[in-house]
Length: 245
Image (cartoon, rainbow, N blue to C red):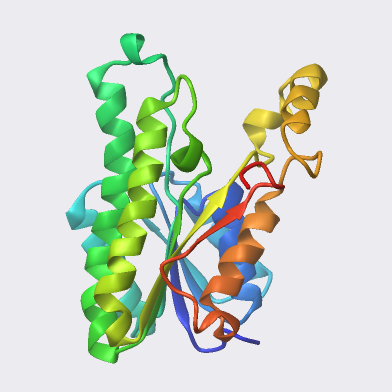
C-alpha cells in the first residue's frame, strides 16, 4: 500500500467527494481523520472503521482558524503526525450577481477559500518541522472558466488555485508539495434528483459524455499524494471528462 503509516486529514468528509477521498486514502494504507461541520461525519468514520480502516472523526468549521487548529491538534494527539491535507470542504450559494446577498458572497469565500487557508496554515508548521508533506486542494473547473450565477463560487475556487500555486512555491524547498484537483460535473445527491433531460443536457457539454463519479476525483487525489507524483507540485489536475481543454 502506497500510503502505509501516513496520516491524512480530509475536510468535508461526511459524504460525497470527501467521503470517497477518505475511503480511497484509507484503502492505500493511510490513517484518515475525517473533518466536517456536519455531525454525520461520525457515522461515515464509523462505517470506514467497520470496513477495517483506521479513521476517526472531528467536527469543526474550517472557516474558523481555531477550529482548523483544533482539527490538526486532534490529529497529532491521535496519530502523532500529519502527512497529507486534503482541503475539500466547500459550499455553493448560487445567484445572479445583482441578486446575490453580501452574506452569500462572504459565506462561500469563508468556507471555500479561507477554510483552505486556515487548515493549510495550521498543518504547515508541523509539515515544515518534518520537511515532508502533501497538500491537495479541491478547486473546480468553474474557478478556471467562470459560470453565470456562481460569481462567489468561481471567485473562491479561482482563489484556491492561485493559493495552491503560491503555497507550492513557498514550501517546495522544505520537501512539501501542493497541488489542486478541479472537478467538473460530478454525480451527487443534487444531480441524482435532476430530470433526465437536464442530465442529458449536462452530458452534452462533456466530451466523455457522462458525469464524473466521486471516485474519479478520489483517484486523482490519491495519485497526487502518492510516491508516483513526488516530482509534481503547483499543478491543477482537471477531472472533468474533457470539459476544459
